[in-house]
Image (cartoon, rainbow, N blue to C red):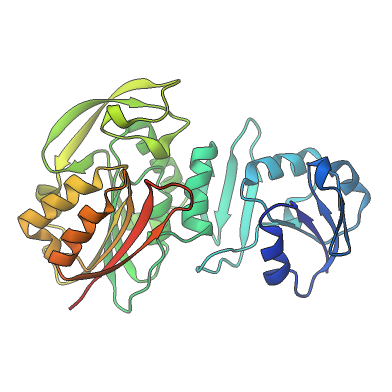
Length: 329
């Protein structure tokens, strides 16, 4: 199969090792003229030469699909020739990512459909559907509690799993919540498993006025003093509810429960409340993104509640990491 690789950057070596078996790589395309030349005996060329080549597949090696797909759309490269190879632990058989007129992407991972509006959404997609940050496996049916639902991609990922019976998703920011509902509408079958709620969880009930930037929905916090993006922001009112009062009935079951936390620093107040109320004992698995360099606080709570855990720090971001924990029964 005659194949083109798009991108001559940091991922290229890995793609040669893992994805080119059975492919006849005829060229590598890169926008950067400084990289044009020869790589392992293969010509590295500019975009303007791509239309002159005959090929069956184009494999995308770069992380920012937006740039690549917009380039290829301008060159009228057929979508069926473009492939974004799987890079994580969950094997997707059929991936379609199509640029939309006016911006954004229409995405389809084995029938799980959603819209990506900006780079913030793209980062969420990469984390969940490419790098599998929230993937897990257990041999029994379970319930997933998705705190920090954002635009709904994690809830869709969970709902698509056969082992998941139901998903409870919590998102306090109204515009982000509406984006999640729109993504759920694209998936009428699996979204029946999802109960989406337009409020966040905390240690007490409260109504707050927070800063909101629709271009950076992954960084929205309920503590304004720690916000990082101070431009194009608007003030919005959000509702937070006591995590114990919200979750006590959901957790009053013998079914296995998985708790996912991605709530930009609010995980600490939520975990303290669940710990102090005794409700943490009802949870079997925790998948958490940690913030502000305070993950040791969560580790102490996990130890006290007989969880086995490991962490995975997010590259150059010292204040950000992932913590995965399983109850030691």
